[in-house]
Length: 422
Ligand code: URA
Image 1 (cartoon, rainbow, N blue to C red):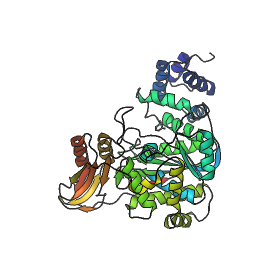
Image 2: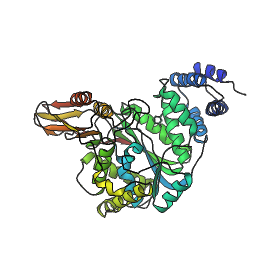
Image 3: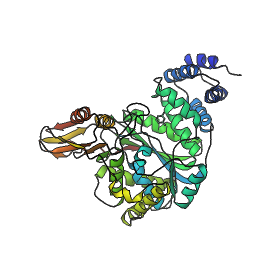
């Protein structure tokens, strides 16, 4: 082997810069099984500690993107959220843009830690499947205008490396996160991409500075791989909308697309994301198109078409089943809601079974939380501020939810949903 792995590890350990060949040989060797877990784990930890230059990060992204199948959908759009609590923006904004004539070829993931995943949410719809061959995915993008797949054979190097990172304390490294996300997106092949980089207690990135660094990196890597890209940095100190949990979130997304009343933050974000995706595609008058797609019912029809093409039972969509077991949480005092912490609510939802506490845990699709007190609103002592759905770990979930609520005597400003963009 031209670049023995030990030399590569030693070089990065002392802060050296790896060549494109060294990066390629390490990734290809690990993916083929020639390089063992322990050597790749040592390299990942060296990268975590010493970092990577932009050039190294781009080489890593390219080699992971080229490690398996790659699709090409230059006319299509995709969006990616770095993961939040109650985030149903893909379920809402993408049927809108598809109804406005921008085809959606999307790669989605499952929940990770406290953050929900679009695939888990969609699988709350009876019959829905993301197991699509390339041919079926392509035909659906052409015929329906919207399809969602999971990574499968796309960027298999990322899949192998991510699993190792997850068990070696090397997830939260900027070059490793950036290359992981962009390699999968580049392999899926949509020509236009919007990143929603979440920032706050319920997100990977806790501060606006870190969120901006990740947003910059995602956009730069994507553009250098030929994908027209843009990013929003959005608040994740508080959950998005009212519903958290798989079936509950699909229900709230359906309510929005049917023109029913949903919280302002959700309605605002879904529209802004849809408009930005249409702008990236160069479609003129995007605001007007987005409003028309919602008010005419075209966006909801697009959701139905997409769900039905992937095997989902559309008749169940308007009233997806949720857990019949519910528990109300009451406000402890009267005042103004200053925080309903996304991290605590995410943990409570995970405890209820909406996410996986351990790899392979079965999900309870009907489990979750509805919050009825948003930041800035007034509550009275004893008023219901949240309803828990589900039967797992109830006492833990109740305590986590109660501890997430802060009520203040003073009025609180509502934070903007979108903190920045690029
Ligand atoms: N999501 C990914 O796909 N990769 C990461 O490294 C982190 C979040």
